[in-house]
Image (cartoon, rainbow, N blue to C red; front, side, top):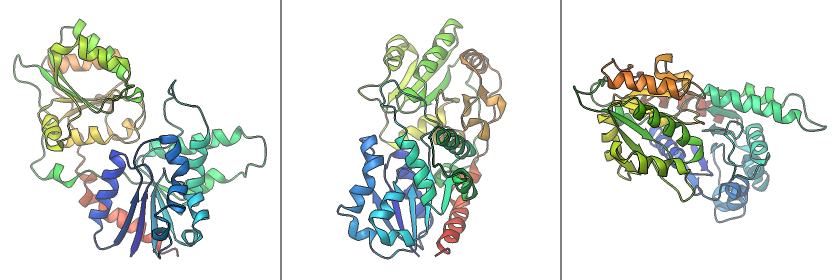
Length: 362
């Protein structure tokens, strides 16, 4: 089967997903087109122009049996610019949706990215979501948005989207599960509790919540060390600079680790993986940490309740501080959920079946 894979905003998790998909289904003939993850507004609105009238136009016009596109792809417009694509079955993978993002004071507020989500969902024949939270917030958000428009809004748009959608998580690397299953264990006597936090240093990852937790731990004289990992940016929230300055004595590794082996080694030796994110549609970093034996501690919101027991979740900063403090004092760590069923080798058959099924619609 000849498959055209389109990743219109090829950010880290999108890139790993599409590479994993191609590797998991090697019997298919893949053609992959990507666009770099920068200039967000232009990228999500202009990818159809970049491809449909750019150097990739000839590739798009070649015969394919199936199109697999990420939700950043403006599939409706692309099918209009390249009419031959309109007759090819298409599956859309939603890593996220534009309805459940926390608002940034710096971002230009527009409903256009949300409308593009709706158009792409309508243009696809099969819609795959990495979590039920992702699926339900898109449907709820679309219903609310469409209610705001004054007239000529077809009544069954969201029903159509819902009927062709299903949940299929982003798989984890098989290499995370090659050894014996690790167990979450606490620190040795008098040793600090090793806590890992890893995410982009951006507003939606909860820097202010992390700062509040660290301040609470300091007030409680909790013995811990924090690995503050992830990529920083010129306009990263000020809380991260404050943490580096005021909690330098608590910090282990800091910043982005380009060597993935080093990153996984830090996860493997950490006791707790802490998330403070305000937006998470699946949370691959936490799942990877669990696969390596970390005890997860995540907010009681977004996609997290789908994947983690209540003992691994916190409702506010005070509860997070209390749970970390008790683990540092010797309380048993919360067991890591078993995510071995999320390995590529376990989920590849489900991907093969659902994608082959939509391809057969032609």
